[in-house]
Image 1: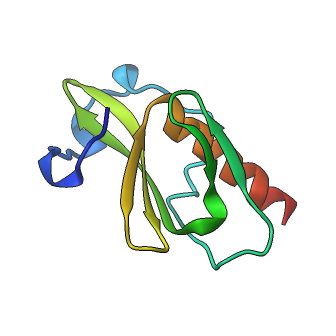
Image 2 (image 1 turned 90 degrees about the vertical axis):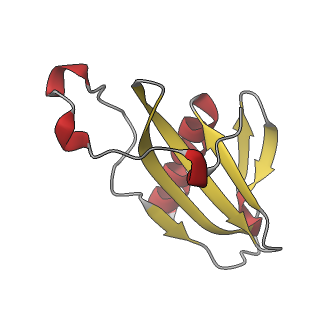
Length: 106
C-alpha cells in the first residue's frame, strides 16, 4: 500500500487522547535524515518490499500520520535520481531501525 502525501489528512497529535496513542520504540529524534552519497552500502531488509540500499537515498523523512481513524508510522524517501517512495507500517519501522543502527555506529 503506497500513500501519497497530497491525499493524506495530517492532524496534530494534540487532539488525540494519550491513552489511544501507541508508544513506538524508534527514536523520535530521527525525523529527517539527510545522506550524502556513501561509499559503503546501507542495506535494509523490509518485510514486504524486499532489500533496499539506503546509500542511494537523498532524503529520508519519518512521521506519524492520522489515516483511516488511526496513527500510522510513515517513511518518505527521496532517491538521488529524484524518485520518491513511501513506506508505511512494518517497512517504515524496519527502515527506522536500520537508520538508528547506522547513526549509532558512525
